Amino acid sequence: MAPAIGRVVHSPFRPRIGRMIALAAAILLTLLPHATFAEEAWPLSPASPNAIAITNLFWFIVAIAVVIFVGVEGALLYALIKFRRRPGIRAAQFHGSTRIEVLWTVIPALILAVVFYLTVRTMLDTRVPGGDPIRIHAIAHQWWWEFDYGGGITTANEINVPVNEVVIIELDSADVIHSFWAPQLAPKTDAIPNKTQQLWFNARQPGVFTAKCAEFCGLSHAWMYFHVNAVPTDEYQAWLRAQRSPPSVPSGLAAQGRQIYQAQTCGSCHTISGVSDGKVGPDLTHMGSRWTIGAGVLENTTDNMRLWLADPSGVKPGALMPNYHFSPDELSALTAYMESLK
Ligand code: CUA
Image 1 (cartoon, helix red, strand yellow):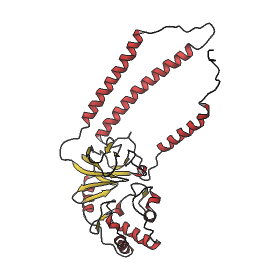
Image 2 (cartoon, rainbow, N blue to C red):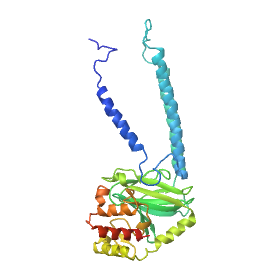
Image 3 (cartoon, rainbow, N blue to C red):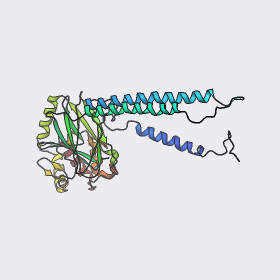
Image 4 (cartoon, rainbow, N blue to C red):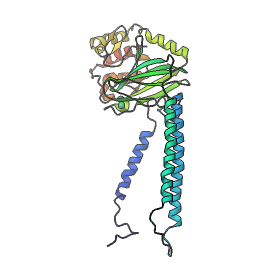
């Protein structure tokens, strides 16, 4: 017996509608800005020539897709309304149409050829430029970023760059695969262990650009932010000079903090210029001047630094820094020391 048409006996989809709405809401929520600092990474406001070229290509492909969508859905709606079931109307029954089949093969092939041509052209246009650009060695770690400028300058989770100058990032990973994604500045590039990759950008205006790891890399993948701070050249040079000099010698509470730092062997993981040279965790030489703690998990404030030192993995799941169970006085002293590292 033929199945009944026109009457839904049982719809397997209905009970799922609630779940689908919940899923859509969850997806929308993840798209809402949630960065703790600066603006959220947003690929559609590019600020470097290569990112601009990629965004232009994106909009061109979106335009083609919109034309196709409107055309196909329009034809579908037209057919649905024009040939809807009515008394006395019978759909024509036929099989095969060479003309239509040729058309729907040739037109998409032509569209894809144009997209292919523009993609290859964009790839060639965005090759690493020559000259003598600034080079920064970026090493991705679970779950933070190390930036080595050479000449003894190392930062973590933020870089300063001059505007209108080409910056090349030499990208490596210390453990698993991560991905360097500063969407306003450069195409997303994977950080692969034992394989150095290159990317470049040229920030056309001053500003702070939010960037993040874009490859799932473990428990705190979501807390692997970094910031690119593009500043005028003279400001950049002043920043380099400040980074090269060791932090001032602490006094008072901060000096007590330094004693605790040394007594608790914090220095076997962290570098502070003139104090310790550990290489496991971020370099803390200028921690006091950084914007965030824990690669963007907290803004760098006194209260937040205390919170972090009291229980690192409680603040950032999986953080490798152990909980030292510091007393409140020790926390105050260490926090003062961290803040003195400018
Ligand atoms: Cu590193 Cu995700």
